[in-house]
Amino acid sequence: SLKNNLTYTSSMMENLLNWAASQMQGFNPYLETIDAHSLSIEVINSLQSVADLKQIEIHNNINQGAECKADFNMLSLVLRNLIGNSIKFTPEKGIITLSTEANSEQLQITISDTGVGMPEEFVSHFNKSEYQGAGVSTPGTNKEKGTGLGLLLCRTFMGLMDSKITVSSAKNKGTQFTLWLIKA
Image (cartoon, rainbow, N blue to C red; front, side, top):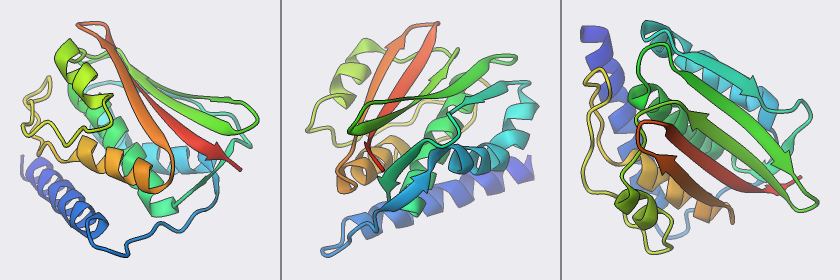
């Protein structure tokens, strides 16, 4: 549909512009205290209509009061890309869950889904420090398009915020991305 094509084009342009900006010398994040619960609600609300089209439930189990040090715009974009990917690769009536764990130094935000999973070679490649992007995009369960830039952007932004991102996945059982952020 036209709306889906416009959403795809807008998302692609936003990712491309953000990635290009991140490659410029002197591009630094503004780290501030972020309320992860409030931010997750905002991001989920922006994607809920897309999830509803596939009857996907999004469970937000991020604890109230969970705070981290991050750049608001970068973390928003990372969450939007990861939740958007979960929607894209989760079949109808699937479930996406956001949760947190914390210790004295870090806040972990985990986005897990009941989607199609990722090939082991991609998981292994993504978790290496030299990851430079997949170079290709895989169509979603409803043939949704992608650019292949989203995960590279997530990885770049997490690194700029002195944080990290990891993935684990099992074919036809789902994928789990974990963000390791500085606790506020």
